[in-house]
Length: 632
Image 1 (tube, rainbow, N blue to C red):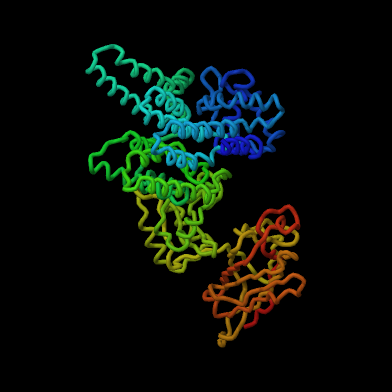
Image 2 (cartoon, rainbow, N blue to C red):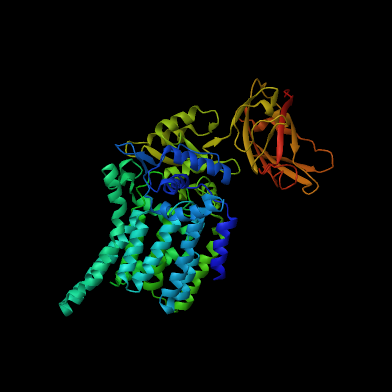
């Protein structure tokens, strides 16, 4: 009870709503239902919703509102996501409007109430011997990060869980009803509704053979009637658009995209796969399912098949790197089928201990992933993915949009080549087409040390494999944003974007991450003296560290063409160190290119130091570079 109160209060009063996923689209539909009682979205509904979002929630960035909204031949506009979930949020929105509250919180409140209701149903109606385990696995469900999202992941996950509980209690009518309602927002769940119906048909046939009495068919009739909501969305869209699936008709789902590699990505991708929010539980499911099949043990086969079918029917999504929190959001409503199959069909020698370990596994993932925060993390590689891409890039070949969008930190069609640059400035992996690979050779920021490697990889592009990953394991190609340099470089006027450097400012450009790499293309450099072993190139850097009494030290490690140079150590209240780099001329193998790597030991944000509102992690500001000596 206390936990229920905590969850409700958190999302009703404290957790700010976030316009993630298709949240704005759902808000427009909810506004329509609130204003005139229909799901038709009028221009006035969009204007009113955006005004409330700006005034109440501080949201002012509105993408094209027509995204996800489509007009019928008669000019009526509807969302291609069904309106049942917005309808459920409308009463909460009405209450918030009456109380002059933040109406966008209606979704979080509804999601929290569904989560609480789900937990109570699981606790009250699960088999006694599995009550604690099933409640624990539901408590730490991957639906939790989506409670704060104004989208139906939590809705579908909660209703699917309730459906499974009633299915295990052999109440097919209730199971069919809740799974059918869940399928209104996420249609793949209709497969489980079908399984429940087939089970009811089988049981009715057995009872009919026994009694030959019409009453034997009543449970089947109730189940069929309770399954009818599964037809609501298809019939609605057929009525208005002449198709049972508007999402597929407008190209937002493409069944040709179903591949085995994408199915593996659903479960095991280290950026967004189900493994990130199931861990040990996923492996136990796969092992138990395989073991049961080999032993011809088909108990609860419908739950296991639902996991696979729901995963497969999620694959037609063209935007595979969709908005998500921790794991791909389609897994939020697939998870209950996986969890309950493990509890009910996978045998353990010591069931209580096995279930306790699985619950502890989910609790750990719940805490590590900060589940209640509901952060969207589809535009950055996870720490694990970064480590593998840095040290063993051949081990990870994700779906192309996962790789490309998390490097660009933006959604959309990439421009090839797409290169992964590790935090230490090393190029390790490239995703490209043949044309992109050709362009790479002409790009001044890519430096080809092995022309033969480039030619061999070019020959491997074929019509069957137009898009390829190429692993750079032996520095055959290096990368650094290359800046022409003659005598002096002023960073405040430098137009070229350099990853890891902020925008130009009067004081220069601040580093915004721990590592920074760029290259200087030295122009008009005289040839080296025959006794060049002792000759030095002197570059004086004018830099400014971010220091304060609470952050008095900063150290910067430096490498020039992979050769370590003496570090810079700054101390608050002390004179600045000598920041002139003395670079042996022997390091300039090609005589003109100098690749510099900087590692800032401990960047801080000005806000943390009480120096301003800036939340970026800043290290040092680069102001100017000056060539002191051109002589050999």
